[in-house]
Length: 309
Image (cartoon, rainbow, N blue to C red; front, side, top):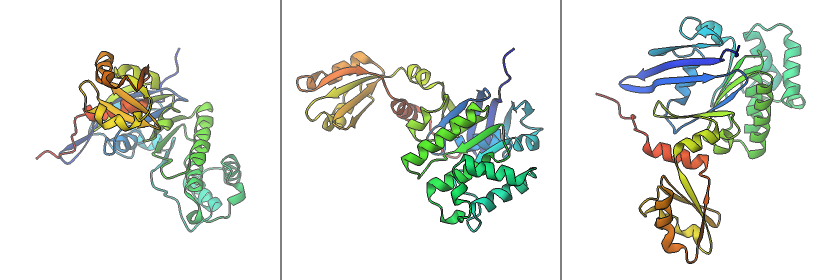
């Protein structure tokens, strides 16, 4: 018998005023999986996360989180979820250890001192435990926020653009921690704008203006997009982006260093579009990137940001 999903929601819908922010959203995530939420700003990612964790009540739809009814068991769901918001939300005038001790008291955890000490050690915060949270850099604030979000050992962790504004090394260390948590059985939902982070997820969901447009592993989403790509190499290839993008059959053309990446839905049309340049630029077929798919979906999504009268 297969394990029950950690998250299984159907038809989730949320409206604010005359605008539908999340529209008939379905999502199933198995335990121990990392699911990435992608989408433009205002696409409904944060609203969806807040409905799943019980902070917002859907206007329509149903589902179960950890086997609990999304509507009637919101309080029980909240106690089993860790939520790390976009903005650092801990106390700047308390030390790292004091912040974690406060969180432990809020959740009425037993063995508080031991739990705090283990969290400090696990996330490399022990040597800075007495430092004020307000004096930390972005990367260290991120570690503290993660430590606070998982201190009560939740079964699901929700992360809302958690690595914005931190350096590459801090981002990599953060993702190492996320995968360690997932290996231990924790289910993770993370919203991000970084394509390399999306590729670190087991699966992704692309949302635009409240509607799910793509779902699956990175390879599955790329394959389902139907996009084809050519890579151009040669003198001045990167300077031809605007000129080639204007040609028929080309949806996007972007420089990558000294090379040129050209995408569109029809490979033959792409070949015709670049044919006039093949005397000096060598074009070879390549795989479209997740970023190509992201831009493709965003360009074709219906913008519902105008509020209905």
